[in-house]
Image 1 (cartoon, rainbow, N blue to C red):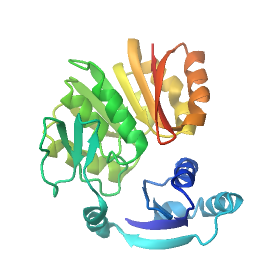
Image 2: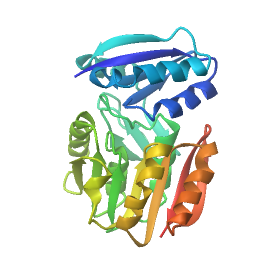
Image 3: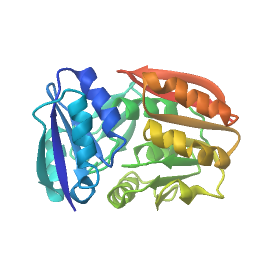
Image 4: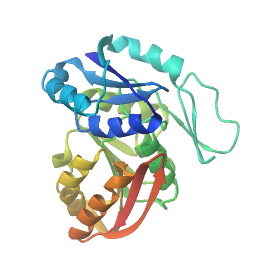
Length: 275
């Protein structure tokens, strides 16, 4: 599968984060941000259906000089190998690629080759979710990683003692990448990758649910999450900006969930609610 790299000039890191949130509503699969440039990756076959809307969105934001660049899938590993540095999550989790040196401290080590899947720990939402998962007592519990991407959150949950996690993603490339990463980290027996959307979890029951997606999908699919969450279960949601907290909290409370807390990082948020 070939991808398109959308190059968007930005004036600040904050503008890049806001644009990332807007573009997350479209079928972009990964984002990288430099000082003056935001790069967003989308399957070439998916772009035609939304290019006009994306161009209008960027024009409305006053963005000029946008470029669409074709990028072949096989070049992605080389791109990450040159740009992907290890991620230290609060000194407790060390996320690295296979070509990086192992951790030198006692941090939990997660080895991820991201390819075209979202979830390396670099983005604030993955960092927030990883830290929040590390705070949970998951020993022997059943969980769901919704929109699993690389599988990094499911892997962390498994390393934290979860008995089993379903890792669900709608993208075939992410599903393949997740399978590779869980095998690399030796947790394949604890994690079941599932290719599909929220309908794939109907009839299941979970002690905890991790959903790092985006505001619109969270609001739309939250009833399905609640239907599968056991009494006393925890739902962690991210992929949202600080300004989205109230809408996420209100929707959760409408569905009978209890707000516990939220945490912030670089303008992004993770919200914890319980049933």
